[in-house]
Length: 111
Figure 1: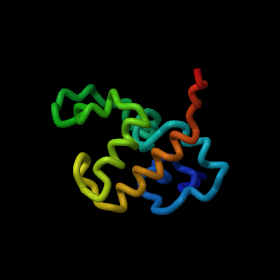
Figure 2: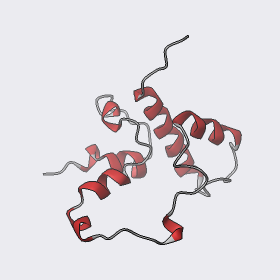
Figure 3: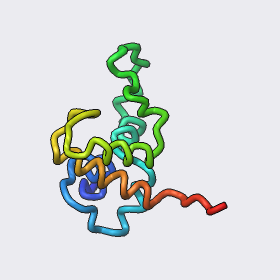
């Protein structure tokens, strides 16, 4: 039996509020969106072939950005739909996910 309320993809994409169950936050790790995990374990993907479609390539340098870079960029363009073109509820979820991921990450030691 699968409990969709514990699904990383649901919590990071579809859930619209705070992730109130504190025990679930560490399970998210440093994931901003959980789609990749679902793709990795999906039994249907054993039939998949690598895609060469340019539209599926990483954009905006997101494959090289750190969590902090993403948060600072979102704050910089706050109040706009620039960058990702998502509606405000998706932007709020993006910020929430960044905050959870940053909270789960290792903290650099001061020099």
